Image (tube, rainbow, N blue to C red; front, side):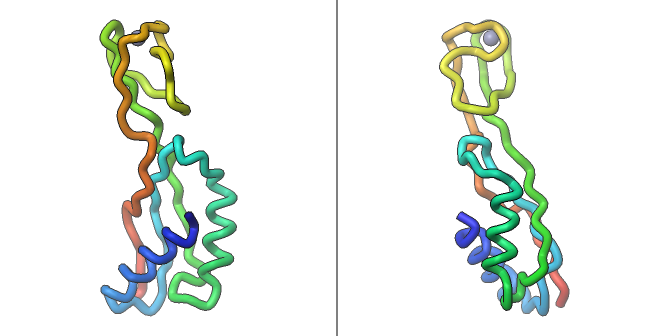
Amino acid sequence: MANEVLNVVLSEAERHAARKVESVSLRVGVLRAIEPEHLSFLFSHLAHGTLADGATLDIREEPVRVECAACGVSEARSMPWECPRCRGSSITTRGGDSLDIISLEIDV
Ligand SMILES: [Zn+2]
């Protein structure tokens, strides 16, 4: 996971001829069950000696979007089997599984 993120960050950084990566903003879906501190720790460990050495990770959690036929849209922190608000069973869910780099701050 952290490796996957680092690889994308490094290839982006190289594409922009960066000398150093300052910070990375990430969107991580709650369904991926990632502890932000754990991911930050692994990332900085793996980034040691690369362009991303010392870069900070800004991790934003993406909830699951729940669309309920009865009460509208709400959010959940895990995959729901019923509407978290009205307990209705007529729901569709979307998102919550992202792993996207939103932005990258680099030094060129
Ligand atoms: Zn509902």
